Image (tube, rainbow, N blue to C red; front, side, top):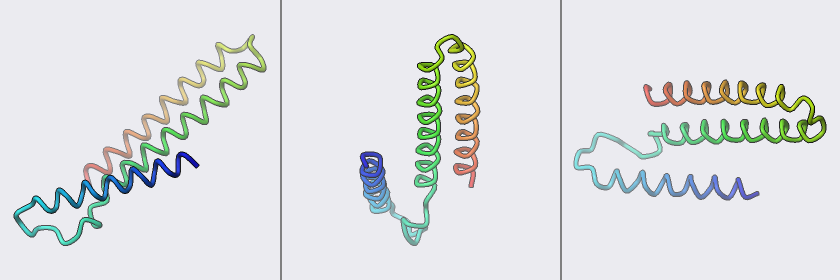
Length: 99
C-alpha cells in the first residue's frame, strides 16, 4: 500500500511541476501538458526495474538463508540478473527520451 501511495504522490508532483513549466512558456507550441508523457513513461520504467530488482534480491536472500553453503553461486546469479534488469531499464529510458 505504501508503494501505491508513493506512486500517486509522485504522479501528482509530476503533474504540478509539468503544469508550472507550461505556465512559464511564452510560446503556444504545446496544446496540453497531458500529451507530454515521457516523464510518466520514465517513472514507470524506473518503478518496474526497482520492483524487479527488489523481488530478485528478496528471493536470493531467502534462498541464501535456507542454503548458506551455496550463497556464492546465488549471489553471483543475482548480480548478473540485476545487471540485466538495469540494462533493460536503461534501454527503455533511452527509447523514451529519443521519442
